[in-house]
Image (tube, rainbow, N blue to C red; front, side):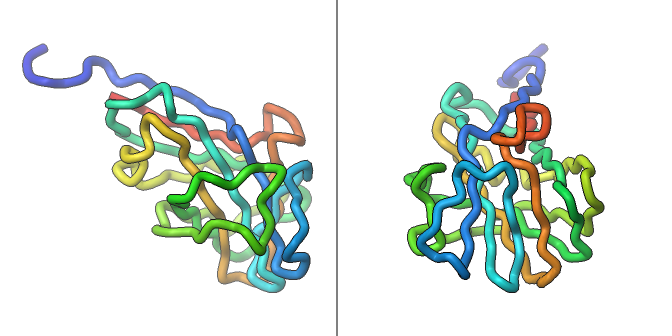
Length: 167
């Protein structure tokens, strides 16, 4: 091959290294050990996910997909997947009161059915800047029909995963 390409694209599947959710109705409570992750607008609940991209410095994201599994109920609403620039939160420490602010929306989930797997395409070029460091994502919603997702505490097969194709 000629030119400055990075060779054959490589696809990697990463499991969330941290996941939790926060609740406006219990603003000082941490849910890091929960087996489910909630997203709702009434009461306000948001989910936070973290992925370790330190091994991929200098690469380019060709495509990105977030794999999620709905828990006991689906939602007629949509959930926004947003970049979070502040990676200082921890699974055992994040609460509604100290949560980092979500930024740009890079994907949308929903509507969803119960106990189903979803692969949500993300804006690939939005993730390239996080290669070589931690990537934090948040899910929030303007819908009052809340959604529960399975967390990594529910088991590795249903944990949130990020699938990246890198060049």
